[in-house]
Image (cartoon, rainbow, N blue to C red; front, side, top):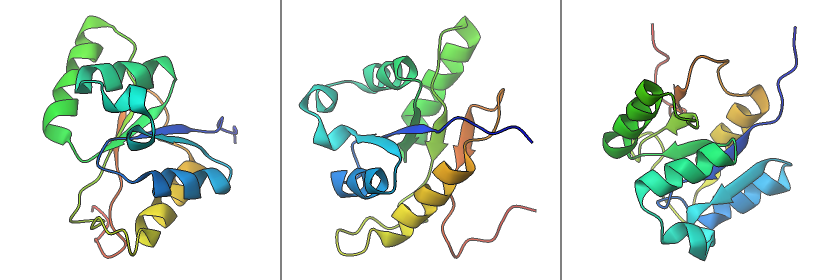
Length: 132
């Protein structure tokens, strides 16, 4: 079994910096768009490019905008980050209880992203049934 290098993760703008902070306390390399002025002012294309440059996966609920950016990057041979999708349905955004999302991300980061050539993954909620 080969060991995977630690994953880096960028949290899109809808995710609280509290989540990034908690994951960093667990030893992960995580940045939240919402905690960095330079990232908050970027377009989706620029955030995607920043994540690619940093060799980071990007967590987002914004499938509608980021999947086409990913597909275009793949088609043109551009460097692309991995995209980790989730939804507010799977993990309701709550300042009072970010625990389930933090736990799921901690597990995902510890396990590592899917191996190449896979560039997309889904983080499902604790009560969701696994795909069959």
